[in-house]
Amino acid sequence: SKPFVYITRKLPESVIEAFESVFKIEMWPEEEVPVERGVLLEKVQHADALITMLSDQVNHEIFEKQTNLKVVANLAVGYDNIDLNAAKEAGVVVTNTPDVLTDTTADLTFGLLLATARRLMEAERYVKNNSWENWAPLLMAGQDVHHKTIGIVGMGRIGETVAKRATGFEMEILYHNRSRKREAEEKIGATYVGFEELLKRSDFVVCLAPLTEETKGMFNKEAFERMKSRAIFINASRGALVDEEALYDAIHQNVIAGAGLDVFKNEPISADHPLLTLEQVVATPHIGSASEETRKTMMTLCLDNIQHVLNGKEAKTPVGAG
Ligand code: GLV
Ligand code: GLV
Image (cartoon, rainbow, N blue to C red; front, side):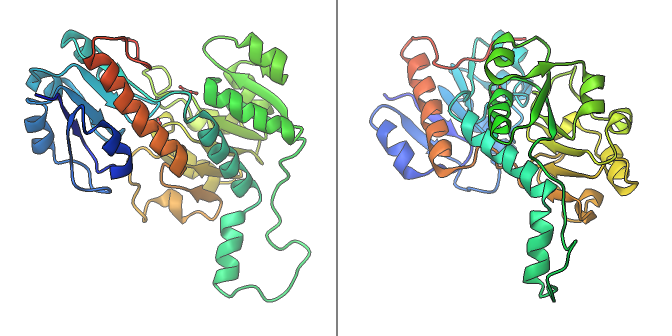
């Protein structure tokens, strides 16, 4: 019989179709409601493969229930929602979706930067609320982006691609990363600096580092205090890198100018969260990679990874343990 693939969210038939002759595919029927834990724990006992979302906690509890499971394909480049040690112990391969979402996520990150600097969402609310009475010299005046300094924390594929976008705006590019990226320095003209120096010198501080024990909470009160008072903070990686209370205080007390946030500590963030009461905060619902084309490519990559592993081949994009 065909291997059983369980998908924790409803994906489009147009993507699934191509794999239905080789797999028995079942999906959680909801697009916007996460799989019930009990259902996932039951399904994993029969599944050869899972496709999981970044909102699913794939931990010991899941891996202890598995009997045939050989691969978990996470529909994201980040995989902090998966316990890699538990997967390794259970002999389960974990895959993610790097590369295919790099440009799309860099576009959203740069868009968020532009929207925050030029107050686009606030300006739109103003027009649609019928508040616009006249042209005025400083109406909705924001900050320039061109020729400013961008500081990228986390110079992975997405970070480098954001840096490439920044060259079009003739920005000075600083970056901080665990390891130096000499190629990016040569190709894009990015300069490696320490975290503190990046915070001090950047007009835009852009967080693109993965969530790990080392990066958790790295944007804290102290970090915001080191930034320029006109600095704008952008986060398109994971909310847990940020102390959100400290960010709220920093913006509220004009320690920094504003923030563009695609990710939050708890998702979905509640509409009455203090951060969302600030005009200087632009918020989007974790849509970094959300173009129709890229999301479909990510889904297909998940299924390709599963097919490779179940056929005894190397996964296309496996995630290393530890
Ligand atoms: C989205 O946040 C991803 O990790 O792909
Ligand atoms: C992170 O994995 C990236 O692609 O930047």
